[in-house]
Length: 254
Image 1 (spheres, one colour):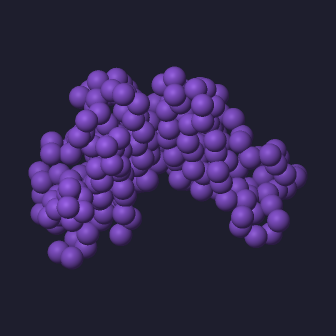
Image 2: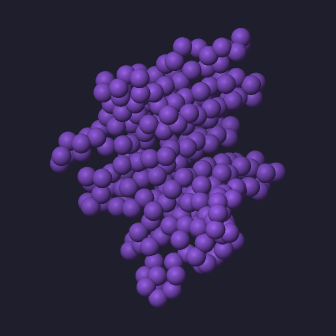
Image 3: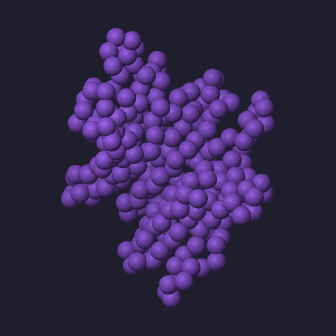
């Protein structure tokens, strides 16, 4: 399930996926050799205990042969009922994985402190990891940024800027660096609004922001009750970015 592909500047290909043949989903990877044959599959993180589920691997190529990976890992368990909790792990391929979503959740979210949908972007030695997280008792987009090839990361930043009294149900974050190195993240945005008691809710929108900066709506529908979702983001030129998204404004998905 959930295959991911990274291709470096010389055309070398790395593939990752969630493999359930052992009875437990595990994040695996393989590389395409010079003879266009896949190498034997290997675990993204061999240190994970047996029986731990891993989901949704993401890959990005760095300098030379370096490939970065992020995935969801369930090796941690909740303190009150001993159930698996899903967290974001990161590694340079061939090295031990480590947890990135390290901020303590609010009290209400302690039992449900799960993460999902990790994605990666790379610009030189800068590595940006984004994911969805329930640490605030709603699903927001979070990120961490490394300036030294993933050796260390700056603190966790909440990208979605919903107010504390708003319920956020974000989805499908997608990160990119502009050609100048500016990090940008696009995502599907849904926010609970008290105004919905008097006028139609705008449903799902497509938003964009740099980590810690103001959120901006990308789709052209403003407050209209029109849904857009599943954005894909890429850099264009030196400073611009192009966002593609699914659009339901005509009653069908385009």
